[in-house]
Length: 289
Image (cartoon, rainbow, N blue to C red; front, side):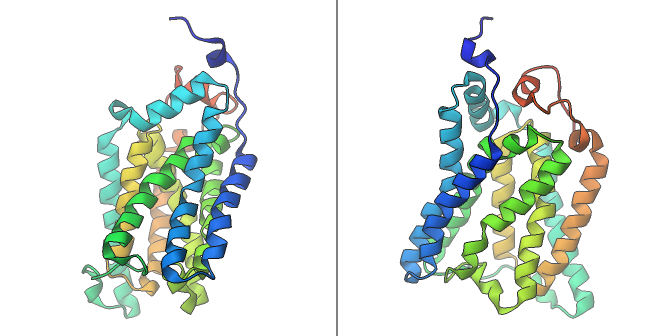
């Protein structure tokens, strides 16, 4: 089968430029939202949410590399590539994290009533329907940006363990302006510095789990969308206290460590470094347990 010259042309990922532009085009909407009325701020927040996906798609489209464009298309619509068993395992696993976190929190005086659903979402200004739409869009749009280009752009230069650590930190920090936007979940954490610190730390171990979901489903964006949506929904609708979410971070860290140990080949192999696209369509594959 003949391939085009552009498909054989080596592609050099640009993670620093990607993050600079993703942050820039997110924060130019989120920072003004901190001083705007709540309903207008919510609109600016949603627009800023689009930035990583837009930047990611533009990077791929203007890359001049046919293989990179083909890769994005397959990751988006290649349903046959999704390892549904692993997606289900990941979802059940996170449900178990929630249960374990609540049970452990009982030792610290937290209520058993956390095993229930909240009536409303944690952020306001857009109504219940708008909040549900925001949670859904966040799950879908974010993953187009983070998995469409971002994670691969980091992973092309290092093993997936280091990539997960770096991505988790950068992804967490990306949310920073939300602390100051009225009505957001993050703004509600400002009542206690511990809750704020916990939010940013929690993104790092969660980054390892999401990377596992990504790689275990042959780098499927759809698999990550489904998992992200479930995580967002559970975090919003299960009546966990802020204290329990601090406990949850410890449980997530333990689960992430378990996944790394069980999937050492996945997280520590370096055969893909410098030739990620080539190994994607070549003989190098990693399996997950």
